[in-house]
Image 1: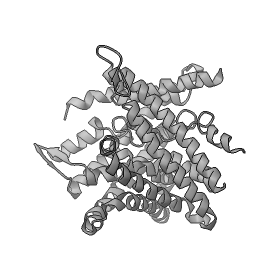
Image 2: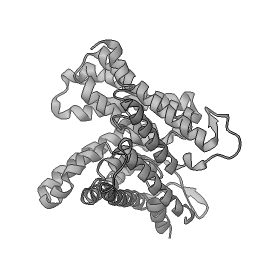
Image 3: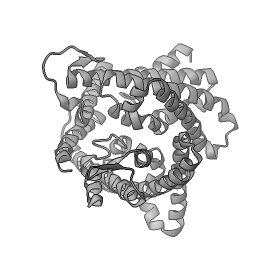
Length: 193
Length: 199
């Protein structure tokens, strides 16, 4: 498989959110605005790339029985790094995303890519696979965040563009489920066409 | 009194799935039949309470005194993973019937972010009772964890009931599967928002 297709398959064909339906908790929980979605996506991408790289390097030495726990430890190490970096450099974003940063550890996408791709492939390919899945995840989060922000507060990346009151429900919990549901319908339609 | 407040707020008002977005993957994954939903709920109540007990003690008697709070994520996930494995082994030995019922759900729970999420909330978030904010003490933490898990069970079982009925109607093709499930969950969350006034 050539390098470019490894990256691009994570974006549309195997989009983590719209096609694989993995990592729903941060998808719904952090996308109250486009910026928050983008921030969460980038944090996850960082973890995905580096954990994929390290796991593909060490996969050969790990006995099959303790494979999953070892992968989780590697992932948890990178999540802790992200946590400390974000606390230091983007404290406000860290506050908003809150609990969902440590919860990247149990995000099914990260462990999923480690198990399905990184444990069987070369380091560079695994790194690119993590990058592709990360870009797909970030795109999904940003689009969902933008839709919810536009409908819920009439703004786009913080710029108020729709006049008057907006539908607050899209910022609240029910709006997250409904907006993602309809986006998935749209994605299915476009993919068919 | 505060226990009642904790229970109502955790089960209904701040419902773990429909309000906090934790544990959405099993919520969508094992909600096809009421019986499997009930099994999963029971397993979550069991593991979440036990995991919170252990992580609470670790946080307060190991991580805090040694001043290594940054190890929280790594420690907690390892504790939860090994706990689930241990529960599985013990259950298999002492109660094969219960193991039959819960067995297949246990491995799934390790990656259920609700368990890790509640363990972290309990040791980091301050709760306000009658005007004073404070960290939860151990019995409060356990009641909180158990009620959060009950809230998960409640939402999961209601949702499974809805989905069983939905199998019988003709859903438009692009909506089939996950999209219609998400929209239904959204409407259910809307209904749960009605509880937000009571605490």
